[in-house]
Image (cartoon, rainbow, N blue to C red):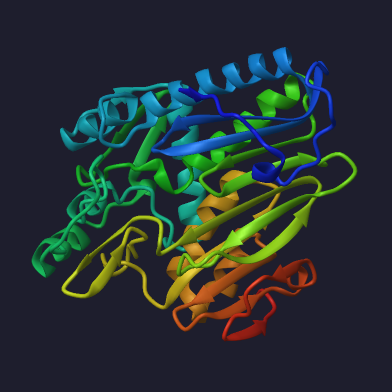
Length: 348
């Protein structure tokens, strides 16, 4: 669904040329709603009609993906999950097979900290529903039963487009990386139409291409406690920034916050981390890695980052201390000063 919006110089923070009849606008922006979030598409230096047609094509792609990959509404992914739960094999779409294979790769490289087969655990916590999750948290007994079932995407067998598993507890949820994959596909589609200066921003997770006229794109990174912008970074050419934070989806019960980034080892929300931001060229990897490093926490994220091939990381821990890789430290500007800043190497 496309949401048309009126733009102003103040709202965009971008330089607009005077003249309302000019056929090529400096900045063209529209919004799409899919995957439960607003996706902002910003194009620079594109004729309005061509920009509209390009955004319509991106919107059609997103709506198809939203329908096919939704974890708790009827579609191809739910059909697959129901077949697995019934102990049956199923012939599915190539896009589903591709996402399974990507998820398996991320589960391997993260040492299991990223596990796309935790759908039943997310359901236990109330994070697979349209309404906001509410307490109380699931009982220890229910979480232990899930842990005992040990679901893993590596337990899926793929034969062409036929998928099966010998573990009926496997329930796929692509929420940890499908957004990154979709952003990448949207960028590809726009570039195929000759648009090379752009941002595709899905709820704060984004990819840029080219420049904003004579300047780079300037990107803000959210403060985990929601009090504005923590840091900013300038990007041009090609790059993607994805963040996982404990502020995105959560509920509070008896004075404690329970967020949606679950640790597959414990069955509970990951601890000690407030947010993780990853900068890389591959948006699907960036999306999955941000989640895996969040789960790894301040003590182990460097090792996991090395295994996943990530070099640019910003981790904010529960005490508002910033952990930075050297490469990112040279590029980032803190708008609000963290309690402490640690620059650390990614372990080989």
